[in-house]
Length: 354
Image (tube, rainbow, N blue to C red; front, side, top):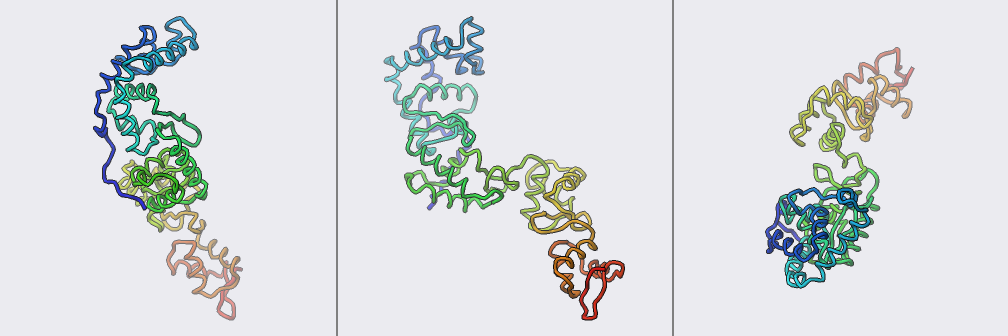
């Protein structure tokens, strides 16, 4: 069961009780001067918030990148061995509680966004995380974003559950958010129930680079056409899929603009629909999704294809089959069907192709 949590954590929570600037200043005071300078530049802790690479610092100081790495490591160790490190342990405890509240494992960007509003603050918290013994950083991989955790067992369980969830989804499958969360919960049976609220589950899902959601909060593999949204074609696909019926290209453009707040010019939208095989013209300016079974071509060609597949059919049967694959009026079908150049009426009242 998913426990609802109405708190929206879009901005820093105010759950951190310590002043990060004061804490970082004290930590740096425990490092040797040369190491302090390297740490400030490596973590962007000075007036310049840009974090410098080992190579950039080495080039500026006239030493190798390996020597810079050694100085950085020595500086961190000096801080950890200082009396200040023990004195400021409550800051680490406070941050650990915050991470636990977020779900014990959190995408790096989401964690930093939750504790700081500007780059200076984020750099300070990144430095505190690196210093603390309770915090573990996992590098970004092909499957997951960079993330921090405080519980290796839970972290491993989440990684495994996300991998199983991805495997359970077919290539083009798209599911509502509620259904996906239920499926995710099935893979999380060994995880502490205290974490299982909707907000934490969605944050865990955001760790994955292979599972994602579209602007309609439908979930699936990131490679699925209904999930990836890179341009007008993809938004047009979502629009038609959501509608569930053919639409005029001008209405597609208007819906993209109103639903997704994306500028979609009518002419541009029409051109994109023409170029993409996911869409098929089924009437005057009307487009459907190819996956619905609609077929391109003039009505005459569609009737011929239907008769080729089904054999001779009655007038009503022809109308029924054609309308399954083409958005067209009954009379238009009959006009084409009664053209003796292409179709003939049998003695038993059925029609066949000439």
